[in-house]
Amino acid sequence: MNLQQNLRYPLTKFLAEELTGRFYESELSCINRMLILYYNRVSFAIDGSEKNFLNEYEAYLSEPIAFWWLSARRLHRMNTLRRRMLMVLSLQRDIFTDLLAKTDFLSLSRKIEAIRRIRDWLSRDSGTSVFKPELVTWRDSLDAQYRHLFETMPAKATPRNQVIEFYQVLTGRDDAQRKSKFARLIVLLQKEGWLGGQTQDGRYRFRNRGKGSRLQIAALYYTLSARGHIEQRLAAPFIAGLFNKWLDHGLAEKSFEKIFQTEQQQTFNCSSSQPRFRYVKECELLISGL
Image (cartoon, rainbow, N blue to C red; front, side, top):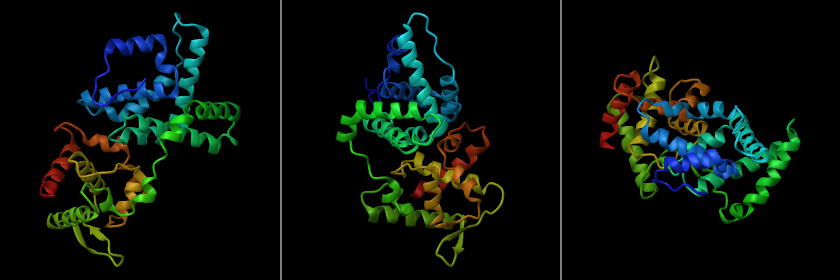
């Protein structure tokens, strides 16, 4: 079962697979179910509620299913998979956070990449966990069930090893065009008074050191992404690290990283009555010449 991108999943089919337990036949079908719900939330939510999706999904998984019309064996399998997905959310949440942050999160390769990361986590941590017997069993099950897909879809090189400068996450035909876009961005930020002079290490000083500086930078990244200027979506700590290479902002490390988390970024997808909308409009005007 594979969810194809840009196709709506029929409600009757969803209900049939939900009530018969087919969504809980494997890790892949469980992830499909999660992505169907997330895709609908992102597509139709008008209140920014998609930022709470993983929290709500975690709460949902914490309650076992008790469909009386299904066999005890099937119910056991369903609840085992639900408990395992809950463990991922509780202990390795970044696996699902990173999946949902990808523009092609509905593709089979992204789902297999997530399952591979679960397998790698189990291989790394199962030896010391109090859940060792179950985690070892789960790891062996993933190897047996998905080995052919792991082999035919080699792990992608991690962006951490590929991207070392901010311009490399921008869209463009080649590095020369991406560097040019970044240079134009710096000029626009200077023209609008966002940036001061450069520090001894070559970074630009962010002029706003007071209230709202954190939101300004977060809104800038959100707007760049929303307007199609961001090629690669990366984990929050890595994005923060790329900003740190060219921007002297004076913010605490943990606080700065947090503004690039998916949940935080999605708060800028808001109505005009929300305070953050003003930051987005300001950034849209700023980068209009990019």
